[in-house]
Amino acid sequence: MKTSGASLNTAPMTISCVALLLAIFTGSAHADVTITFFDTVFLPTATTITVGETVTWEWSAGDHVLTSGVSSDPADDPGALFQAPISAANPTFSYTFNLPGTYSFFDELHETGLVGTIIVEPFITVVQIVDIAFTPQHVNVFVGDQVRFQWIEGIHTVTSGASSNPTDNPGALFDAPSTVGQPVFDFVVTESGLLHYFCVPHEIFAMTGTVQVQPLFVRGDTNSDGTVDVADPIALLGHLFLMEPAPNCLDAADSNDSGGLDIADAILALDFLFGSTTALPAPFPNVGGDRTADSLLCLE
Ligand SMILES: [Ca+2]
Ligand SMILES: [Ca+2]
Ligand SMILES: [Cu+2]
Image (tube, rainbow, N blue to C red; front, side, top):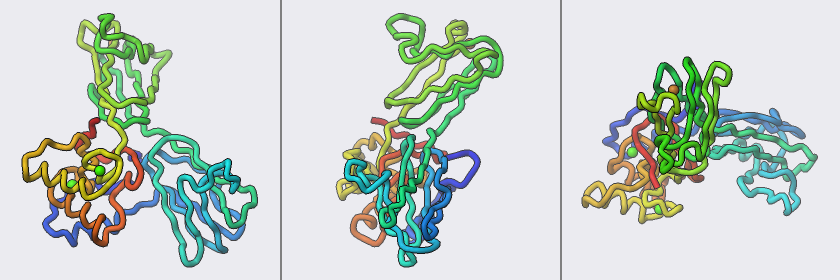
């Protein structure tokens, strides 16, 4: 999450009690930005957040139907992302934005032409270019994230490919100078996989780096088929107790976002499917990434 502020709970947890686990996650919802519905307006009408952050709409007066889109014209696909009453009886609604972009919403009950805008900026991971090294040399990001190569000293390039050998396709994705005059190079990753890059002048000193681009995932979707159902806790239990292969996307299998896989993840998924748990941690229910600092990787 954003380095500055509120984020998901990253504290390591040793869970011996399922009730405690469920209690923790009942209270884990967080609001990064709040938009208040007054009688005829909502404020702020324009706001900017970072991928993975949550917007909460809060009732103040009147009855409203918060609806994604710009109008109730079917051509605008109203409610495609979310639609919820905002009233005294339903005073809040939250939505976590997991993909960069510009999003709109309006009040379908009082369509005044007032349209709210939420700009969702990509999550940025910084790689410093200092001495003859990319620091850190390896970073893990998610599809849609932005990698910022920040010049500190020297004369370098940031060139995609494992080496200048033509078989490595050097520069196919990017080939940017990194100098005092051009100190910042931003690259938005759009495809999952392991991305190699190097510095042309310092290749002989092994000045190289890698970016592991992880696919977006749904929390709880252990078998990566796009939905959370009973096959997911079964797959996790098979891995934990029957020596079946590990899931490709460990973040998805980590149902409780504790940073590790154990039986509590299967129990939480089962309680979500058949018990009283109503939601899994972000990015659930949508696809998204996980920027909490854990060591789990999500691979294809
Ligand atoms: Ca699944
Ligand atoms: Ca876990
Ligand atoms: Cu260099």
